[in-house]
Length: 288
Image (tube, one colour):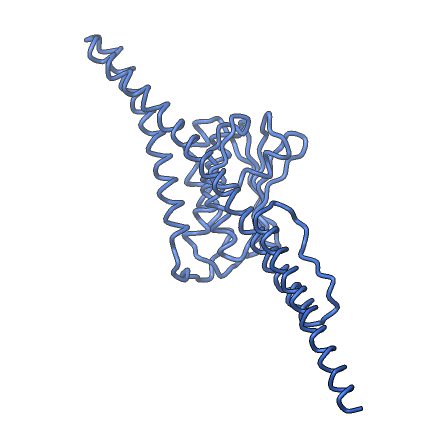
């Protein structure tokens, strides 16, 4: 009787081991198949063993994380390729113009022509300088791993100072901004230089690519809104304006670097930034 019982136990253990080995093979095969394909399906096993099913569940979680990382890398790689193409074009165009007008300078002694060529060269080199400065600033912001130096900042005053700094550029573009800042004292514990950079980048983008108007409001909740008319922008393009290196001709030729920097800095300060399009009016909203 005891001998028969031992045989039953041994047989049961052998069956258990066999089933576990089958489950292990199923998991190994499923893992190999999922990592080599773009399928979003998960590993499934027939075993009812609780530990083996838990193992499959953990591996599925890791597979999902791996797929997210792979997708992120793929998008980043595509984004980087497009960025290199766009930035190369943005640098090559003014550089080609500069070389062409330098050649023209050699062929003329007319003071008026010389002055005109020099003005064009100055304009093109300024465009290249701006782009390279934005690239340098963006790389610095991404590489910073030190803790930001925060302090209590009077947001109303800082925003007013940012607007004042752009007054000459606004006047040159014929823009008479509508400014509505709350009388309530809005104070936030942030890095003043970072917040100033956010406001400056948004206003600069509106000055360069706006439709000749600009409205800036600051509510009692600390929400700053920058609105201006825009043309030929779709809702999809508006949602991509903050993507790093996003450049499309339909997006008013924006490099995307300025707004991408604004988003990075805003989120680093614990705030949020978004863009909305309604009836041809683009609004960039910063919530602190």
